[in-house]
Length: 118
Image (cartoon, rainbow, N blue to C red; front, side, top):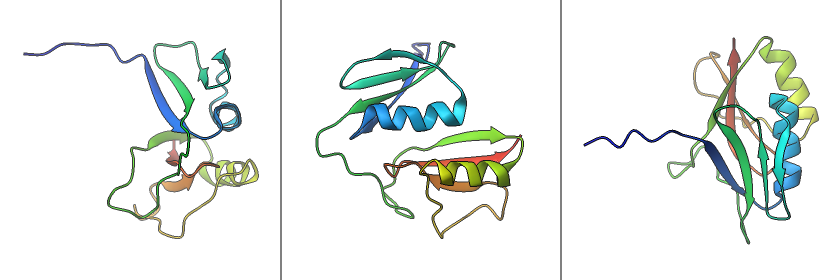
């Protein structure tokens, strides 16, 4: 039996939703569509990216078999995007799988994401 539900948002737990939303707003260009003290939503398309405050939140480790889900993004210039994202507060872990097909980064709270050439 299939339910056929429509995905509307990906919600990321974090300590500071406004700051993390600002980082991803710079990455995606998506506008804030909702914000309160504990959550921020980006984007007005069929899927939103949201950030919700969780008391005592700790980001995942990398590499770690118990890692959380991660997001993948396409960019036109991965090297320039990496430089810009590092300037915005991302970090680049030493462990980089994929033989150069993508770059693993972590946002300012430690959530992993990858960028690859469009």
